[in-house]
Amino acid sequence: MGFFGCASRARACRICSTLIAGTATVPMFAPGSARPAANHSAIVEFHVEDVDRVHKELGDTLTDVVNGPATMPWGNRSLLFRDPDGNLVNFFTR
Image (cartoon, rainbow, N blue to C red; front, side, top):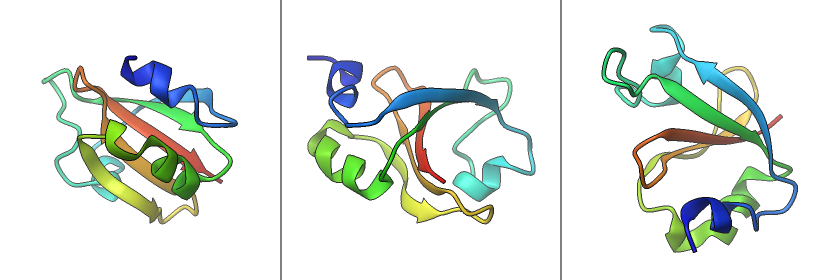
C-alpha cells in the first residue's frame, strides 16, 4: 500500500489547501524545508482532528519527518513531512 493509502486511514483527514510558502513563512515550519526554484516550494496541507494521534497512527509510514508535531506561532498544531516523492505534506489541527 502506498503512502496515500496509509494516510487515508487516518480518521477525519481531508485536503484543506495547497500553500505556496513565502520566504517569511517557510522558516516557521522548518528552516530550509522548502526550497524555491528547486520544485520544493509547495506544501500540500490536510486538516485533521488530532495531529498527534495521526502521527502515532501513521507510525513508521513516515520516513522523512521534517518537523514533528509542533504548535505553530499562529496556533495550528502541525506535522510536516515529505512523501515518498519528496513533496512537503502538512497535517494540521486548528
